[in-house]
Length: 170
Image (cartoon, rainbow, N blue to C red; front, side, top):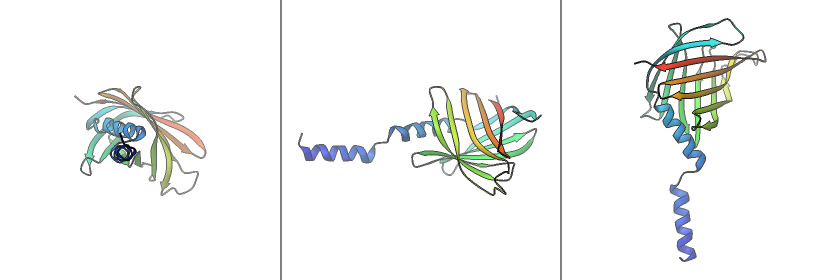
């Protein structure tokens, strides 16, 4: 094979192929798309005496380019998150009950173990650095109809966690 033909072939592969990281994030986004539907379960906070019933609704929007997650605690809509790809990055914008909007990015994805970890990027409407806000999320796919969400919440430089355990409604 001539050097010129080999160069053209490699260039085409580079232009049409996807990187391993991009493929992993696309697979993770496809996993998120599989959540479409209604879910129910429980929530519990560490560091505070709060627990109860949780419900979630997942649906696609933007010509299936985004997954919307509406979370209700004890029957009251409290949080909405929107998951989407940004190039090769899996992102999340969280519209929090604390009335601020943290943005997170998938920082570790292990689909073999069913885990996607999101890390804090930036935030809008944060009144002060001490104001409570979501700082991270661990999402675990335990089974096709069973997931957990573990939100890391930071307020006054102290961490607490909200664990939400959800099963798909039959």
